[in-house]
Image 1 (tube, protein in one colour):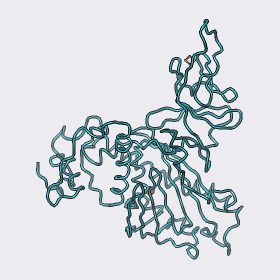
Image 2: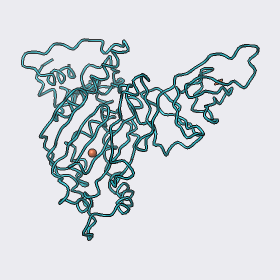
Image 3: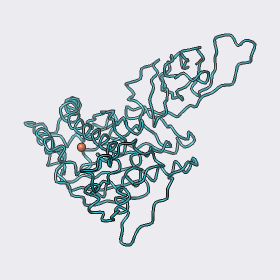
Image 4: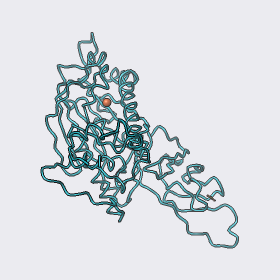
Length: 406
Ligand code: FES
Ligand SMILES: [Fe+2]
């Protein structure tokens, strides 16, 4: 096969006429992935971090719910004391899901024979006969939980690391900060990396050509350091039909935006006055629940006709309206795109992807490296085939494109 990557990056040669030449099989898992793109789309997220499980408001006292982190199910429940706990979602007796059970006091009771689990995952009570046996010592895994920013977080990995892994500090989220806040989530049928690609890559302004959250983006800085990536775009922020009038351009510089990846979280800041965090709960290769926190400094907002920044109470009152009329419709556009990209990837995973924005490559490199770090730490293979060495004058991206087409 030719190694002219320019031709191959347009489309796989002959794809127009050769029925059967496109990918019709199942998309490859991580060890079978043959290109960086395939690895990216098969990678999980390192479990030794805090992940959003539910909004705090979604779990009442006495309730239990199932959540899934990377194909593993968890029973999250809130005891009568208001505290949230997380257990592996299986009864140690016959493996029924504990999330189908009942919360009794601060214990979680399996729905079948009624074995009761405490927050450490230990069976503490069996109400039926023990038939002369001693109380068996039976246990399932328990996971650290915390509640912050209106989100229930779980630590699905090595519990010993939970206290040293920190959530981002968001002082603006404090009730008394005076900042306007919008929490919103979506469960999209797309791999988490497709969503993170979307949030960091401003080349998709076309998708939002009517709403114009950002336009004419030019990358002016890109720095990767360890598990973090930071970048700046020169761009026009908030030029939509409504947002155009709501942003106070005198107090807020909307000509650039800083974005970051603090693995596994993504953020942005416009003049430190319009900010967001994006937290993903990777469900599996095809589904992700994404939690967004947006927050706005009071001085960035302007109400047409009002000669001063809106008072706190008004700012608070405006947020649900902004969420419904501006934020949700905008992110719905992204949702349609990321789900369509997932479908496209599954149908054509062997096609090379000529991504031009180096930001995408920088983010993907971190995601892949962290997943390999996890696999290696657990003694799991990362690949069945070693990548071939680079040819003369060939960049890693060239090699990736060539490998996809070979
Ligand atoms: S299956 Fe859970 S108590 Fe028997
Ligand atoms: Fe977008």
